[in-house]
Image (cartoon, rainbow, N blue to C red; front, side, top):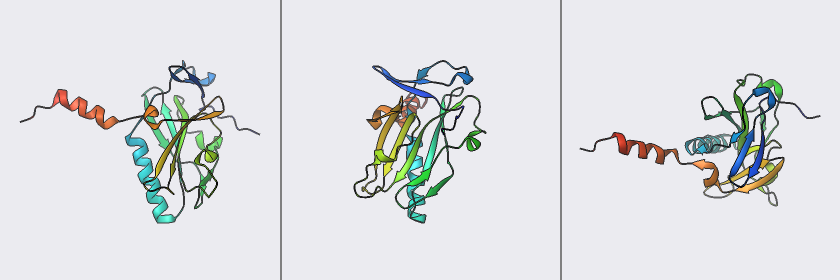
Length: 179
């Protein structure tokens, strides 16, 4: 039996991008899926790889989007951390503290797929942006997938991740006087 979660949205692929359809209970208009700031997956990769180095176990994170403040947030689901992949599922009682304007729009997982396994085999079942860091490859390889309408699709990471450092450098150019 599927758990109904009020913070889950549906995603749809369109020619000009990916549209997020918030659940009816949120009274939000559909919107284009915003890119993740590069600093977020970088931080999650660092934390996940440190966890792997310390515990020899893989870790998963949740990716939320605050629709009022237009920012991405993270969470950690309850999980069983195993050497090859974390085992986790969404539970309504863990998401009851999510604000009424926040959507669960993805995940980030550190994996060490077994021979014959593919990272895509570890995608969660809900629509969203799912980043899978393959720790078997040196340097670790980030796979980016979007599940929309229940169908997963590999996408280019640069299409889903914006370099926020470039934005800050551009901002600095207009505000800093070089002496």
